[in-house]
Length: 303
Ligand code: HEC
Ligand code: HEC
Image 1: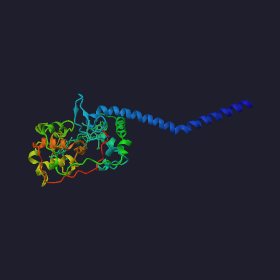
Image 2 (image 1 turned 180 degrees about the horizontal axis):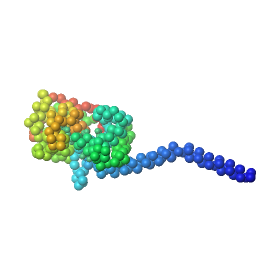
Image 3 (image 1 turned 90 degrees about the vertical axis):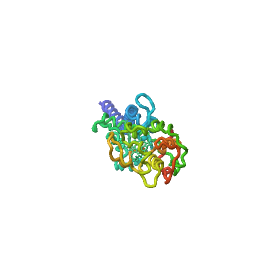
Image 4 (image 1 turned 30 degrees about the vertical axis):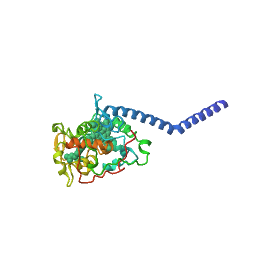
């Protein structure tokens, strides 16, 4: 009798100790579980990214190197996503630039789901007629956000590239080389078509072949080269009068959907070659200053 009670008491105490131990460890266990769960989600997101997004945003998300389905290198037409402007902190500059009041993860997941079809970003969410289910959208959005890192975000503000204020200070341009880099690596043709062939242009930007005759009329006091130089470095300084959207002449979207990072992706020689290709001249005249903001754009991650 006595022993039964003692055994019963010991068993009861043991049970309480074990339960207490489990309860104490529950938060840690849950955390490990959700970390593993998030890990799987990110892995799955990585696979979705490589298969669906890398052609436009680059394998590493920096939009510097893109390949088409045959493995040939193409220009990257998507914005960089592995980018401080979009990822660093709770309120990255990109949210304000886009007038987004919600959270960063809603911005990223929402943009992936709805796309910006008028700007070349396809729609991915099934609720909008795209191919990805909600859990897949969340996984790929988590994968993108996982690029936020000490290396990307921890550094002190790095100075941006410095561009001459006068386009006439660029080196002489080489139009043939310009015609090449216009396609790869810069990918201007994806939005503008080829300068020499209007039939290759179907948006979302305007065909640039008319600029040799019209650029200087776009802004008072500008030369042709002034205008093109400014349009490439600061797409929002002036919005082109007419864009092709799905091949139809339409108002250009405002703010501009042209990538705003060419000033960080081009050398002075690239710039001269591109302008030479668009205008068909090798030397440039200048009437105005074009001021590229130093360090105001978050720097790309180390390459
Ligand atoms: C056909 C090319 C293309 C593909 C494929 C593509 N994107 Fe995009 N994406 C773009 C373009 C172009 C933009 C910029 C649109 C604009 O200027 O507003 C963009 C913008 C974005 C943005 C918003 C970035 C910002 O700073 O505003 C996110 C996030 C994004 N894409 C994620 C993805 C993901 C994830 C996938 C794959 C599921 C994907 N994209 C596939 C072209 C593409
Ligand atoms: C993602 C699409 C996209 C890419 C890539 C792109 N642009 Fe644009 N570009 C646009 C859109 C949209 C406009 C019209 C809105 C504006 O004025 O910014 C435009 C406008 C321009 C203009 C002014 C045209 C006019 O008629 O006033 C020039 C010049 C230009 N782009 C040059 C380039 C060059 C050079 C490249 C490659 C280095 C390039 N763009 C890459 C979308 C793009």
